[in-house]
Image (tube, rainbow, N blue to C red):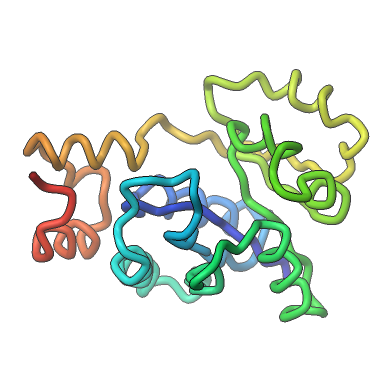
Length: 194
């Protein structure tokens, strides 16, 4: 089986996250996608909702699809780095192929991540194109790892969790961007508001 590991802050998880996962499965890049929310100890992310809230929203978003799962592996009392997460899943699913799902924005500086060269050398990456990054420049930058980098034909639209948080804060409509269950959860728990 081919399993995609989809990391992110998911603050909140939105329809584009789910669409990417479903498209990757539909187009046979992977058979299953596991969402792995970043722990709140990660110093580069501020304004993160609690681990529990982000995990619960992801679980709500994935509950109607057997090929989508959620893992709390990175939700620990200490920072868990991407290379550790990928090693964990490769050990857990020894007989399966593990793919790391990342946007071209992340790919642009993955070499600066903790053990970034290891991630590039020892893992298959499924890259989702974002408009602001020229994929050919990135492929040239990482030409030594070209066999591990798979550029998908899935393109992300420009909706982001940051934009959605701003919209909620400013009382703008966000139903179009969020799964119904996630939208309800945010409203019921009065998240991201003033």
